[in-house]
Length: 260
Image (cartoon, rainbow, N blue to C red):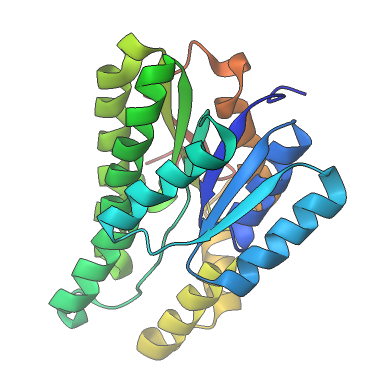
């Protein structure tokens, strides 16, 4: 088990990629601190992890756009476990709309959840990891940062920002033996995919299934990625197998961005 004796904090742990990541890191030996704004979904993840792995799990209901709450979340992890070894910044939200229909409120919400939360998550975790002189941070970007998608520009901009933040943080934290990397998922069947489907139907009359078909036809493997595929990449980057990898953004999208 590559993460034996480690403590991992996962945001957006209630479902989809967050839940799959929680289970995978626990299977690798890590104890877990789970954070999500949806307490019911998070409790389901915690129960699943405990049942399948027997690892220690704590839960915190957190709005990661509120900076003081992010700091308090990390402080609680250290109080509960005495350490923080891995941070997975997984919270994200999509908004599908034509350029001229994106409001200021839409834009602010997308950047707050997808970029601001990552920055201050990294900052809060770094305060602990720098003292430990060790740590792994994995940020969730998106293939939308690699391939232009005109109907979700704010999301793509935020996720491109995550890549830049990851690279800069990797340089800033390298002297403290902290690795900072990112993962770009492709089209993964999660609650976010349901939101994407509703957005395309509302604005363009395209169903979720039709949008999925459009996406996978542009990828060499012509298939969706599963949450477990993304979790496997995160587990690798969180482990010492990736100790010489930092500032990297790993595409896990079935080759969707090869020609981008």
